[in-house]
Length: 419
Image 1: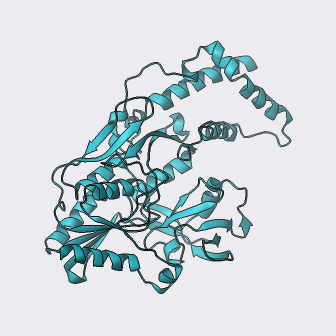
Image 2: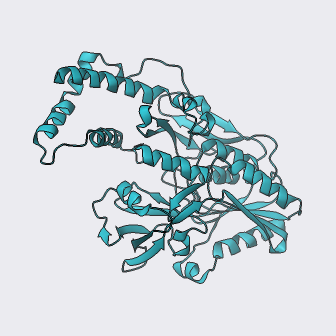
Image 3: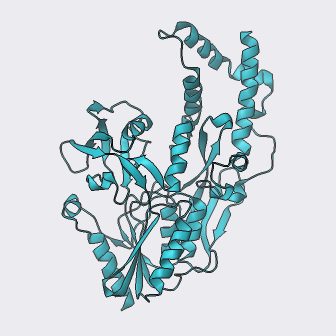
């Protein structure tokens, strides 16, 4: 009976591998609660391929698969027979096996998401979820803040980009998977969480108490500034960002501003297609981003979409260490075409493209790096970032005093360009 189960499981695993490799969006068209096909995070439609015979384990014969996975099933049996706390959670073991398989690739951006995590990713990009309001990096030893969301409890409590969360509610996170730490930070609106923060240039860790809230992420904020300058801040690259941006650009441009500041600080990205659409509002023509695959396929190029509303107005772009991924695509295109100057500090440096593939039976999803992306001048920024044309730091004293020397420098840079 055990052997029959193992053969069945091996066959199921083969199907799973085939599904994860080739559907890359096909399943999305069959689930109405997921984003549209061309709106998957970091997915470009040219990636979809005809079904062909895969290489590797999924192409092996059943006998070869049986041999390949024999140590796995041996371990499975030993856990069920010998582990002290019985019965074990088979679903947790399955999810752990998938997580371990993807972790073995050595790519911090390729990972497994359980159903709740996948739902959270989609809800965040749709603009609403409950928590403290911060984008985080789960690839290091501790949970690291990439950026607090504008007007969120995290920002109001003084959480900064680069902060490490080393304890939660008094419990040390040393040795704890940062993804598990992230889940501990989340919680219902109105509840309180105490984070112990380790901050660069601050000698001793310190506690920050934050009341969780429902986070409504406005994709785009805008206003008119002194000297007749327009200011636009993008917080994410989500489902409604392009339409919100166009609407706000129209409202600003009727006031005939002399120049425009685009603020991409602490924006950790989102959908690839949205990045192309946003960049097209400022770049009239040419390649916005290229995707270079590892299997020898030709590089895909995404060109500017005609009809942008702000392709001629003088502009500068604000960037910092929290400017990542889709934000770097937009910033890189603007810098390469000399469309505007970048002001701030070196960006995060995420130059890879991921595809999110939901698994059958609401079993979560896998996020797999499928390509590296390049700027219009074929620059790779992965783990390097974009270097601003005008470098301006923000100190902790600036944050504490409510000063913004980077914005001040952006205004000066733009006024100098207008002269």
